[in-house]
Amino acid sequence: MPEYLAPGVYVEEVDSGSKSVEGASTSTAGFLGQTERGPLKPQLVTNYGDFTRVYGGQIDDSYLAHTVQGFFNNGGTRCFIARVTPEEPHEIAKATLTDEDGDDVLTATAIGPGDWGETVSVTVRDAPMSSDDNTIFNMVVRYWSVEPGDVENPGSDDPDPAPEEEERFDDLTAEEGSSQYYGTILEGSSTLIEIESVGDGRPENGTVWLDLDNGGGVSTDGGDEAEDVEDDAEADEDDEASTDGGTDGVTLADYQGNDSPENRSGLAAFEEIDNISIVCAPDENDVPGVTDALVTHCENMGERFAILQAPQNAGAISDMETPVDSSYAAYYYPWIEIIDPATGTTELVPPGGHLAGIYARSDNQTGVHKAPANEVVRGAQGLQVNITKAEQDLLNPKGVNCIREFQGRGIRVWGARTTASDPSWKYINVRRLFLFLKQSIDDGTQWVVFEPNDQDLWARVRQTVEQFLTTVWRDGALMGTTPEEAFYVRCDESTMTQDDIDNGRLIVEIGVAPVKPAEFVIFRIGQWTGDS
Image (cartoon, rainbow, N blue to C red; front, top):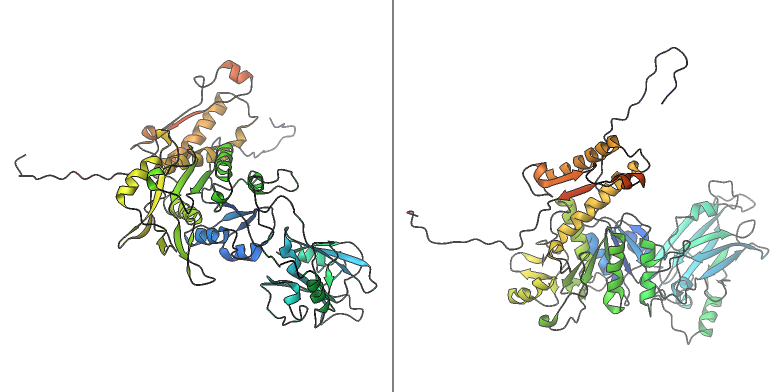
C-alpha cells in the first residue's frame, strides 16, 4: 500500500488482473549423434550451413548430417545438436604460440575432442598496416581432413590442398583494453579453436599445428614449406589419419552424457535447454539402450516427444513390434532413399530427421493439434521397401507408422500413432497437444507463485487459463461448438481443501476435449431409388 504524505496528485499503475499465456514452441528439435568435429555442449543451428560450419560434413559412422539436412528440407527451422563421442578418451588438441623470444603467449585449443584437431593450423602474420613495432597482426585458422604432412605451404595464401574450413581474423592486437584484442575477437567467432592468453605480447609469425600428445603444437617455418610437419608425419607413419573426431565405439553412457555442471553433454545437456520439444537420435539402433534412454528422457522432462526409427534390417513385417510402450514416442518404418549431395548417388537413411521437419512444418502451417501425417516427405527419392495396404493392416494396430509411396501423390507419412497401448493416448497429435498445453500453462502462470492464496487469486488464475484455452479452441485444437463444450477450468473450494491452502498449494483442475484425426474415412454408398 503506497504512502501519501504530502498534498498533491498521485498517478499509479494498476494491474488489470488479467495475465496472458503465450503458446510454447513445439517445433524445435534436439538431435544426438556423432559428428566430424565440434563441441560437446549442444549448439543451436538454424540451417544446414550452420551445421556443417560447426560440426563438419557427413561421416561414415553416423547419419546425423543427413538427418539434420532432412529436417531443414522438410520445414524445420531450429534444432540443437548434441555431439556424441566416446567417454574415454576425450583428448583435445592444443598448441602453444610463443613470441619472438620463445616465451609462451597464448594457447589455441580445438573446440571439441578428437584427433580432428591435429589437422587444424594457426598462422600468424604481420598486418599490412602494422606499426613499426609490429604490434598489429593477422591470424588465419584452417582445418583440413587430411594429415598435416599431406598439406603443402600451410601458412601461405594458397595451400595445397585447399582447407575445408578457413577463418581469418585481421588487425589483432595483444592489448587487452583494445577493441581489436585477439581474445575478444576470437571468442565466440571461431568454430575451430578457443584462445587463452598465457603471457604478454603478440605471437611471432609462423604456422603451428595443434597436437594431441603434448599440447605444444608442431611448428613450421610459417611461410612456404611444412618439412617439420612432414617429418613428424613420417615418424608416425604407422598411425592412420582419422578425422572422425574419435567417434568409434560410442556407448549408451556417451548418449546419456556427462551431468557435471561444467561439462554437460548428450541427453544430460538437453535437460537444461527449455526450447526442445522433439528428440531424435538417427543412429539409435546401433547402440543398445539408446531408444529407451530417449523415451525415458522425454517422459521425465514431461514436455518432449521422441521420434524413433526401425532398424534398417527390421525383419519380417509379421514379427515387427514397437520397441517401447509409451505415449511420448512414435515409431516409423521403413528407411527412405535420398540423393547424397557429396556423391550424387542414392543412399538409404533413417527417416527421423525428415519426420522432425514434417512435425515442425505441420505445427507452423496448421498447429500442433493436426496429426503430422498425410504429408509429403521432401527429398525422398524412394523407400527401402514399398509397404502394401495389407502389410500396413498388420503394422498400424501395433503403432508402427508407415511411410508409403502413392502413385501420383509421392512419398507420404501414412501413420499418426504413438507407441502407447493406452487408447487414450493413441494419437501423436493428442499427446503433443497436451505437451503444448502443459508447457504453455506452466510458463504462463509462473507469476502465481508466492501470491496471496485467496479467492481473488483463484479468479485471476481461472481467467488466465480460460483465455488461453479459448484461443486454442478457436484455432481448431479442441472439440465443441462453444468454449463450454471444449474445456473447463476449476480453481476454488472444490479443488482445494483448507489443508492444501495451509500448506501453500493452489490446485487448478482443467479438462479439455482434444480433436482426434480422421484416421479411417468411411463413405457408405448404396443405391437410392428416390422413394426411400
